[in-house]
Length: 183
Length: 183
DNA sequence: CCTCTGTTTCAGAAATTTCTGAAATCTCTG
DNA sequence: CAGAGATTTCAGAAATTTCTGAAACAGAGG
Image (cartoon, rainbow over all chains, first blue to last red; front, side, top):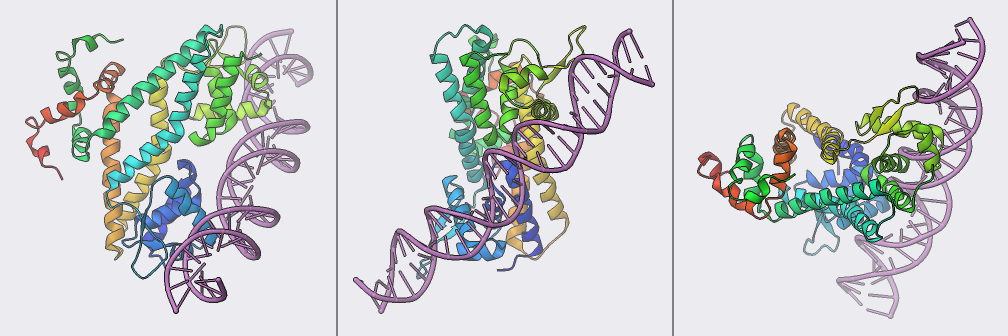
């Protein structure tokens, strides 16, 4: 398969960005290719479109599957696996955020709790900072859990509210008086 | 300087997580150490607390400065540089998010716009997907810009609203009728 | 304009990550 | 259950990133 110049440039960009996103070049390229391809692709096609080794493609696809970022399709009469990305971009974003949270936040939250459980270590400052950090992460993951439950419709609405958000928050002052003076 | 077991474990954890966060082990450790130290530290102290080379510390501090994650302090009569992290965790989070956006999102947004400017490439599907992705990123960065402007007080309030958020969003339906039927 | 204290740079060493080709494994199908 | 097609595994090669020690640099006093 030969890529159009547009596809080519898109794929190469994702490859380059890969390292900043915590994935490697090949994984970034495979994902980009699947993302802009209207039809599902099999490993062989990906391999020759990207000019990498067959085994590298295999590992990349495995990695993407572990991230839940690709869907597996089958074509009747063909026993090869075909891969695509979800049509719905919001679904992709949700997956991405969920996986990053799992890999980048959760282990640290566990560690902080573990450290607190070990009890007073005679280092008040460090202990206080760790507790503060844990609380902040808990607040953020709690908010995230809330967002995750919202259907896309409402999420989009929230995101497009713009400068009305500040006022909206204030409106809740009467509803939840105990929150008003939160430090 | 010798670390307490608590400090030690915290620092090592941040070192290990570093690679997942897109920084290297030493940078993670330096940051962790500054974070849990009540007093500003100089490069020499950091070097021997972590057991790395002086030059490695220098590069790590430079990296952290490029992320705006550390503050420089000076002690009268001492010409060495002393480093700390901001006391306010929210400030740290804001910086972190801003920098990650700058490194991980903005370049891609630029690239997508650039690709669109190159005009029709006769690949309708890819073009549509790229446009859709750009729109989504624009929506999210727009929302982010809004959040960034909120003072911490309101941000905390929003994050602690919990399940009331969904209802709150709906309440705006009357206020902005044109948004109601957004696709 | 030395010298002393502290910092940065840089070339190469060490470690880690990524990639490949070959072999092993898996799984339909006749 | 043999064989063909497809995928995965794996050990080593290649590439990249991180780290170090030595040298260069900076600037405040004397």
